[in-house]
Image 1 (cartoon, each protein chain N blue to C red):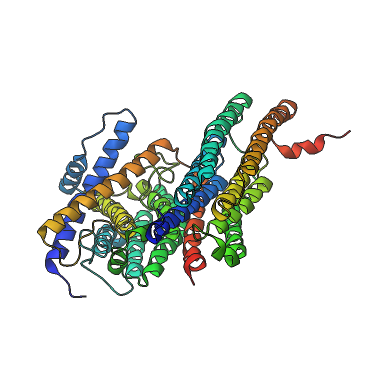
Image 2: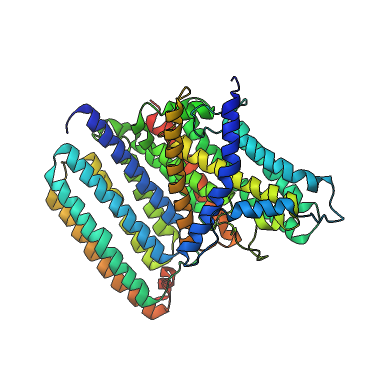
Length: 317
Length: 223
């Protein structure tokens, strides 16, 4: 685990500047599919720049937790992102526990996000936090089980080595356990990034919002960090999905410049396909009632559990 | 076509599509909208036809292509069309509250999948193509029965019957690929076709008499 400074810098820059673009493109495509013109994809950058310039309004009831939370949310998402292989199969950062540490970091971010929602004492913030925690209590086990499935087939929880383990034999990707885990993780992705069957990213209607409810009290720089952190988290989960489950085109550890460029193209193509799939799901489905969300997530959980069990049942000889 | 490597790949494809059939089945258990359930059933039948075609391709078994074509014609095009028309005519689009809620049913179906895998385990050596297609087939049958018991709408029960039939066909295609004579397969196929048409009329009658598709109301019919 010798840290590789150029790789760290490259991946940090990618995470920082690709994540808002992905969010922007998804918003734009969604608008197009709904016969609206939509804001240009780079609008998210302009929004962030504007938020960063604006003054903040802090509630007089808010404690230090309120100001601390945005930094934690932003930094945990970024650190978790450094542990996922993006262009090179060897991720720049690998802490003990591999994927466990990554899920733990994301959970830490969510914990502080919920605290930040609760802290100023507004009714909506508390409601959003409570909903977020309810949903994550079901989504997180499904995420863990799905990732364990690939970890067991690869024999390690280190994401870099999981991604490398399937590089030599591409047909291993057709393993049913992987397919089940992929389906489960896709549902979890929709839930974790606040997409439509679970949460609506474009609403401020009090009855339905989850993520937005927690951000209501935030403004200025803190809001920028929160939004940026959320889009980085979305990119990290999408990267996890495309690079760990479909590590096609991922460059090896000592790839030349050309290999990196090819890897970047492959990564962008996979990301585009996944984003398009999410946009289609978002446009063709209606938002579920909050009490129906556990139904969807329990489907994800059972799929992931079956995936994990089937690695033992079908191939454990 | 008969080299070991390509047979390996064929086996992978069959296993993959069988797993997808299972995914569709689980989605159907969590689904409450009737039209979506019908679409899911059609998707499952497409997968079944694809499995039949792959098996036929890798074993040079010509008559299995007929099974694939019949599945496409009957279960992907005709039956969904028929059921869609039925839903539009009786104007009921949503499932009545099932006996067990979705999370509980999902967990039960997970258990049924385990049961199916456990029962099919001693027979894995018999399968020529696909590592665990028999397990998936058994699971489809078991969860199909569960779906039939759990749901109260007549139309969903018909769909559940159809998924049970999909499971049986999957077992027939993947396990005994060239064993099942074409006549038997044709027989099963038309049996189901006619059964669904009759059941469709029955569903319509139930709706006419009770203004609902709840089959538990049939208890009220006393002589």
